[in-house]
Image (tube, rainbow, N blue to C red; front, side, top):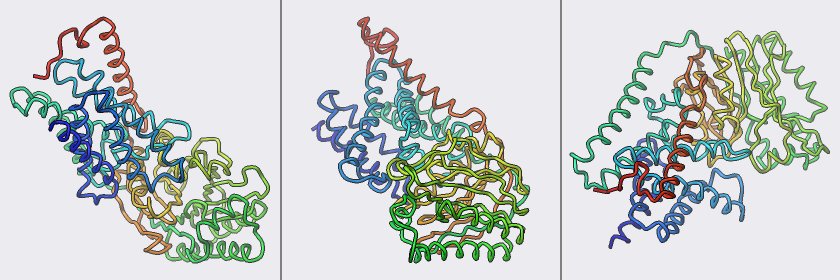
Amino acid sequence: MAHYRNMAWLAAGATLIAVSTDLPEIARPGIWLALAFLLRGWRGMPTRSGLPSVGLALYAALAFATRASLPVGGPLYFVIVGGLTALGLVPLLLDRWIGERIDGWVSTLVFPMAYTAMEFLKSRMPDGPATWGSIAYTQYGNLPLMQLAALTGLWGITFVIAWFASTLNWAWERRFDWATVRAPALAFAAVLGAIMTGGGLRLAFAASPPATTRVAVVSFPRDLLVPREMFRIADGRMPVDGDVAVKLERLHDWFFENTEREARAGARLVAWPEMNFLVLDKDEPVALERAQTLAAKEHVYIAMALGTVSPGQPRPFQNKSVLVDPSGRIAFSYLKSRPVIGWEESVMRRGDGHLPVVATGFGRMSAAICFEGDSPDFVRQVGRGEADLWVLHVNDWPAIKHSHFEMAAFRAIENGAPLLRPASFGVSGAFDAFGRAVGETDHVSGGPVLVVDMPLGGVPTAYARLGDFFAWACVAGTAVGALLAWKGVRHGRESITGTAFSRA
């Protein structure tokens, strides 16, 4: 009977993990219970015989949850899911290896430390998934909790969710006897209460932005090029002649005509989504000169997103962000440094990894491109540079458009900098320095233009200055716990403290 009960808990936890990113915001607290149920089922099983069941449940959950976000198919997809499953099992194994050798409620800290360390180290893997799949993102819309990202980055939010799971299980194993479980329950409640109160106060007492300005996003017309054509042009497989050359000419006219229209309507900054302005390398100087002339004529900033193609080169694609100021001067030209694994990685020339931060009439301004915004440690350059506004050019695909849009809110909070997100095949939008959306539109269903009054002015954050100190502390704490547990086993002790562990 106990076996079937534990399998039921595993199934419940896996199901909630599988659907957590697709649930509406009001239902996303389910991820808190997902880890709790998964942990409950795992702790009730013997290690060797239970591990395959846990692994299978987690594999099924991740295969369903990542079906849209992983840009690969075929056997490689299932191999990658297997790797993610193996990483997901590590915190569960460490919880058993270390946690059962610690006396008292301090053992509840093992799982959250290990889970946070796993998510963090996974995000730092070269050419890895960055922060995709972090459970912290499921808390989009919980603005008080999201403010914790200004201090700890995502990792504090992940820790709190996982700590809830381990605390609930600690109490569960002791039949919720209040005399026994009071200390961990009150400790967790006090910390969560302080986080929510602090986040609420941060929002309530946030100073009004020193200024706002009208900005516009112009995306490409969806009836002109389909994604397949865009990618084949970008990687040099489609010759740019005949009808294709005519389409690119129409594309260029579209962007300049609509940028001019929005500038004349009052926009002081017009931004374009990632790689939307496809241009051959030989034609790029003419396109830039045209943009400079337009910017000077209309006294507008143009944040161009160019996909420059050099046919015949081993890596023919350059993914660029170019800012032209109202004097017609190029304020910066930035080459994307972190490509998406797969197609883009195989065709793109990488930049030097240094995000631009320049003085403008809006204050200090920066930019990054799409997948780079999923790596908090990389775009922390925005916060360290004390940017007052930054542009994150994006080219999504419909299946991820909402989740990817929501991830950007955390980058705004971490860096304390308002964020403009021009997107194609996704959601264009703007966030203030506290992650509050101030405007959005869906390129697929809402049209190619977004106009919004953009708040300006950065807010200093601890995360921008101190970086991933909290995550590294979790890595160190997990490593120390594992070392002490290993030494305890070697010396024949049942617990790290040298006393017998009891589940009483």
